[in-house]
Every structure is written in C-alpha cells, then in structure tokens.
Length: 396
Image (tube, rainbow, N blue to C red; front, side, top):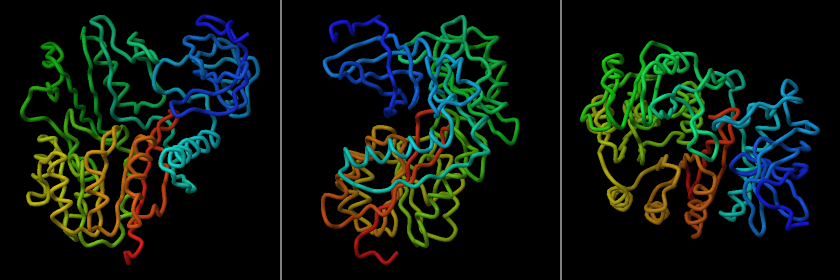
C-alpha cells in the first residue's frame, strides 16, 4: 500500500493536528501526510505532491467532511490557497489554540523548556489589519506567489489587507513591472511608500514617495512617534504593532537602562528615550539615521560584532532584541554572559527562538519567566512571540 503513495496519487486523510508551516497533519498507512488547506477534524481527499520515507506532502483536492475548526461559511466550499493567508477558513478559538501549541511545542522540543504559552490578541482587528506587503510582478501582472512556487497569482482584494493597501495595489496594477514591489501604507493617513529593487520610470513618476534600493535617502512617514522608513523593516501591521509594543513595555517594566538590539528605527525604544537610558543598534543605515533625527545620542549603526562588544562592555537593566527570522545565534553567547537583569526576546519564528532560548538557559543564570504568543498575523500560520527571561537573582 505504501508503494501506492506516489506524487499525483489521491488519498483519503483525516487531519488531527497542524504543522508549524500551517498545513494539516494526518496519517495514511502509518506515513505522516501534510495537507495544505486542511484543519483538525477535516476528512479530505488529498493529492500528493511529494513523498519521502517518513512523510508525504499534499494539497486538499476535496473536503469530504468538515471538522469543527473550519468556519461555517467555508464548510462545504473551501477557498483555494493562493498566498500566505492560509487560514482564512480556520475558525477562532481553534486558530489561537494551535498557534499557542505550535509555539509551546517548538520551545519544548527544540529548547527543552516546558512552559505554558500565554495568548494575546485583538479580535476586532482580525481583518483589514495588514499595512505592509510584498508583491511580485512578471511584467504582465502583479500579485502573490502561489504557495511553494514562483507562479504569480494576480492579487485581488485580500481580506487581511487594509483598504489603503488594497487601493495602492489596484493603482499599481496599471504598470507593467517585473520584480518585487514592497508597499507600506499609513492606516490613519494618505501616505503610501513604494520600494523597488530596480527602477520603473513610469511608476516612479506616478508615486512621488517611491524609492529604489540604491537610493541613499528614503522617504518615510511617522506613526505613533516612530519613523516608518521605505524599504526598512516594520511590522506587517502598524495597527497590531500597538498590541505588540504594549506587551514589550510590560516586559521591560521599570528598568532604568535599555539596550535595544536589531532596533530598526526604534519601534520598541524611541518612546522610552526621555525617561531612561536607551541605546539602539541596527545594521540598517537608513533606519538608524531616521531614529537619530529624533534621538541623536540614543542610536548607533552596528553589526552583530558591535552588538557583542556592547554586551560585553556595559551593564544594562534590560536587553531587548527583535532579530530577523534566522534568530540571534551570532550574539547569543554574549547575550547569555551579559550583566543584564532581564532579556526581552521578540521573535517571528518559533524554531529559532527555541534554539536561542536553549543556549541562553544552558547555565544557571537565566530562567524563562514567560512566553506570549501575539496574534500579529490573524488568519495566517505565522505567530509573533515575546519571551521574557530573568536572572534568577533579579530584583526587577
């Protein structure tokens, strides 16, 4: 029977769990089968796309019986999956439960840390929350990549996108562009930032706030006191970023000094500059320059070697870090050996967070006080995490 499980074959699968990437998981003849578009409790007919010795990957061909985790409006006719918004048919509170489980499982399996994950969300912002997105053009159409491919699906009106983001995309559709286009909108004003790797003369003439990667100075707009810089990292939702900042602030507490690593343009620390000592480091010149215009003495451009130097040189009440998806492995040893009282680690990837927490807790110095899943990406498999570590003798 297992020999019949070849790419292209149709198999009946009952899904009982969800994987880190968002696929449903079931078993056929003892083989683990990942099913894109299926949720716990679903019974589906799945078409295999790839097989291995211990697992197979598939897409849902037909929903036979919907499970309780599927929203009623899509119980009989599920939407096709054309982008990262894979979970629009995944009902709350099941979606919240599985995001917490995915995060806690990673922290336990990879990090060896058994902890109950807290949940933080803003239910009224589950739709229309996204204010930044990357689109892809082939010279004819502009849209999203089909899941696990580079086939472009023309972008329509995604329910996750803020209306201003959808309007900007509709305006961009009139231009023939080949390559990536990053769009960032202000949800409370009319500013729109367009960022391209390579030039498009007609598009640049139409959008006065368009920048190329080669531009030494970038357009920006302020949001909640922080400069949002074209082409530099900002959270995908400036609206839900407020929820994340509140959680980070609560984790920082009453500390008098704050070291902000991978700080960008100061998202988590600019508002602290007037009442505590702040130093932020990041490799992005444009982001640091924007932060320095507001707080000239609090931000410095620096790579991970510079971060390690500062960690070894000074003592800080709290060290805050928000590294890219690959995590903070180059600095994690220096972070573990630092003289801080608290570490607040913000992460968009459960696996690299768990790996780094394991290293930080190798000695008896640090303990993971709490881990919180923040729903920054409703209706997608992605989850933001905030981990608070304390020294075992800390008084903060």
